[in-house]
Amino acid sequence: MNGFLISLEGGEGAGKTTVLNALRDCLDQHGFEVVTTREPGGTAAGEMIRQVLLNPELKLFSETELLLMFAARAQLVRELIQPSMARGAAVISDRFTDASFAYQGGGRGLEMGRIAELERWAAVIKPNLTFLLDVSVQQGLERARSRGGEPDRIEREREDFFERVRTTYLSRAKNEPDRFIVIDASQSPEEVVLKVKEKLDVWLQKWIEK
Ligand code: Z5A
Image (cartoon, rainbow, N blue to C red; front, top):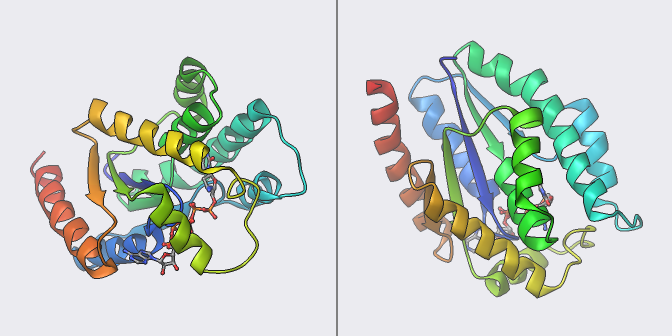
């Protein structure tokens, strides 16, 4: 495969949307075909699964939640990500498998080994580069709430759930320093975007030289 996959991760209100747009423009200027997607979702089937996952009226067991995340991901990888990478595109995904480790593993307490098995079997691929936008739980939740609207099923969780999610993300980043770039997302959107672009340029240079 000649293309690559960049994922964006972070807790609530970390600012992934702003960063995704900036990355898309940057890669486009470098001459790449850019494909953007999101998880859960990104395909017709995946978007239907997303509606089930985020519906606040449903009581889902943690195992059901995990399997639905991977069902959407299995479809997304085969339908969109792998074919795009095969023709050399730069794929950017708003969340990928690290989110399952952070939310279902860290947040819900499901066994990490099971998630790793699903990663190998259903997701198959790992991102080549992951930006972790790190912001305190309180600041992230304030931002997310300031957007207004009804919180979805997962957004209704308590703060300690989101603390465990953040801790898991940071520990994964520490364990895989070659893949993760952690960005201090407490700064202004302009500062965050500048930092991300700087890091992307360095990474792209290495990728092209490989
Ligand atoms: N999930 C899971 O549990 N397991 C999995 O495997 C996967 C996902 C793949 C997806 O819902 C949910 O599924 C998510 C994780 C779970 N649940 N939660 N909670 P989603 O896609 O709707 O939710 P999200 O990914 O968390 O999106 P978000 O809350 O919208 O976060 P964001 O995209 O990072 O935030 P944003 O929309 O870019 O910014 C939020 C607000 O803050 C907005 O008003 C911005 O203008 C503002 N903002 C952004 N950056 C800044 C800075 N730097 N300063 C000040 N204000 C800012």
